[in-house]
Amino acid sequence: MPRPPRVVLVEPQEPMNVGAVARAMRNFGLEELYLVNPSPRVGPPWAREAYWLAVHAAEVLDRAVAVASLEKALAGVQLVVATTGRPRELYPAPLVPVWEVPGHVRSVKGQAALVFGRETFGLTNQELDLAHLIAHIPTAPEQPSLNLAQAVVVFAYELYRAGLPNAAPGGGEELAEMGALEGFFADLERYVAEIGFADPHRLPYAMRRLRRIFHKARLSPGEVQLLRGLLHQSRYAMGRRDG
Amino acid sequence: MPRPPRVVLVEPQEPMNVGAVARAMRNFGLEELYLVNPSPRVGPPWAREAYWLAVHAAEVLDRAVAVASLEKALAGVQLVVATTGRPRELYPAPLVPVWEVPGHVRSVKGQAALVFGRETFGLTNQELDLAHLIAHIPTAPEQPSLNLAQAVVVFAYELYRAGLPNAAPGGGEELAEMGALEGFFADLERYVAEIGFADPHRLPYAMRRLRRIFHKARLSPGEVQLLRGLLHQSRYAMGRRDG
Image (tube, each protein chain N blue to C red):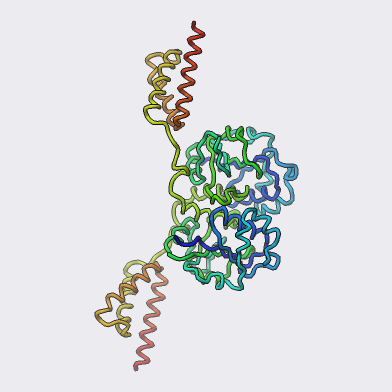
């Protein structure tokens, strides 16, 4: 399995942004953080506000590396993904949407790097020249640009999601088996007839609607048991009242 | 088209979080923000730090509504999606991953609401009882919980993405048509033979490798023209040197 992609921040200015980036990385299993010419306010040593925002991701900060050029931050990397928050109309490369990045990352054997630009103006064209592909997060035209840490959240989330098995967590819900469900419906039908909820000739229609309701609910075994218990108790109570 | 989902924050404590939420909402086209019993530090009137973080999303804050209960924040809503950052083992409902939420939202005619809990301990079980479904963002086990605004980013991103046409922005790349590409390959083959890059019996193999390179590059019409111009110029220069 290849190493998780490296995150490279070019000239970050705000300690809190760097901390929030570290936290988002740890949320989604990324570990290697490189900072190209960080502002002296950021560090190294990394600022207290960065650690404050990182919460339990202090380790990511502890191991973060400051380097003097983007080329140095990309040493040993096989696939370079530059990110941009605005259309680069004059730059001769198509933009790849963020959800296509995991496919590219998995298609190479070695490590990939995700490169994020400055808070103010992103990456220069010379920096984009180093990238195999340029990725962006489609956003509403009214406010196109995400802040640095929020952009890292979305990229890291997409990578993490792509690595998950393609199923609901826990392997999907456990549903009641047919026999138990039909046993419940039989109980319900008898009950509905007994209480006079529907005329005999209307009963099938009423049951069909009730079935739809409970099918939509995708009952678990325990829920079927609960409902049968409820019916049982209702009939018992009715018998006592009748008697 | 149904209205975009409403975002409901229950008892938010940090003005900066509320501002970051507003910004993320505007990034991804969400407009309605309800705050249930916000901390007095948050407002109303909304704190300066909230506006500072919101950047161009001041409008979202201007129109945000403070209410005294979650029920009031959900008035008129047809589908309630509660969000949780941690497993709710004792709560009898399955967790839906965030990427399944857009399908649920689109399956109802009316408006949906996304409910986010307190920064400290999320939503209570009584609050979860109001929800049709409970959604979460799968994260790395080492640091499971995202902060409030980062969680809103991921939910809003997934909803926005689901509303986009399922294609690359701009309708995909424009690739060179077959005829132009094969014209280039013919030029290239002639050139490779002329310069003695490969023995005649090795030429087909060399060409196959070269074809692979340029096919992977997915050349645009302009790029094919550029490469043909380059070959043309190379042959011209060679002729001059030979002569």
